[in-house]
Length: 285
Image (cartoon, rainbow, N blue to C red; front, side, top):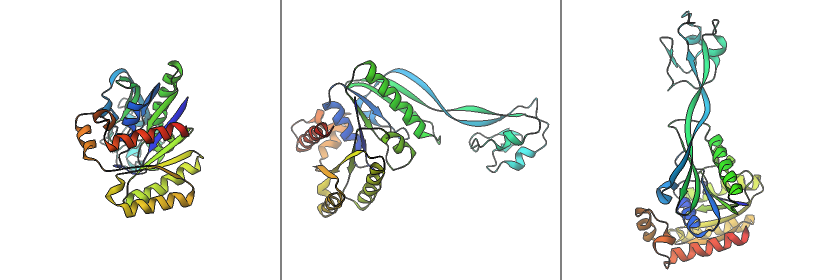
């Protein structure tokens, strides 16, 4: 079983569109959407949810009125102003536990807080594991780990040979959770100042984990001078640019219809380039 991670360093490069196209092209695979903070793969794959699991990753304080003597020590100690009239405002509570430790009456406990959900679904392209982190919730890295574990379990049980992971943008905790232990990283970038800057950061992260890495420049013809800069940079550090995909309004038309470009118009230049990219990725895996 191989694990392919598609990441971008920044949002808006077309990472999910390419991942969805790979999902349509690949055989015998499991799909994992690890962009748990802003999941959108389900918009294209339209999953039929088979299992729903709760995700608990944080704690919040709870004051028990029957034990509370209203001494005020918890209010003085709380740096987040989360205690009002000896009741916890869960919007402000950071779960630090200071009030729990300082209460002389043991009237405060730390309770598990529901942080989100993760799902096992069936799609037109095979099994998919995806998740939804609650609004303003933390620990997205832990939720990514849950998604990956579930995808690996399904792949083992169903004898799947590949897990295709749609990774989160950036270089933070959820990206680190996504990249650990994968067989290959495909970085999708764009010919912009921000695209090149964040490409450099995500390549350094991939190198830190010693993962086989390749780059795809999406919408390369929007700024061919910047595309050349990206190609020269990648060449200078020994990272292969294995595809340059042109800007194509048909991709937008496909997205509006809830399809990947390879399903919407197989003979278009963009679809052909993505098919060639997929073949190169398979060879590298």
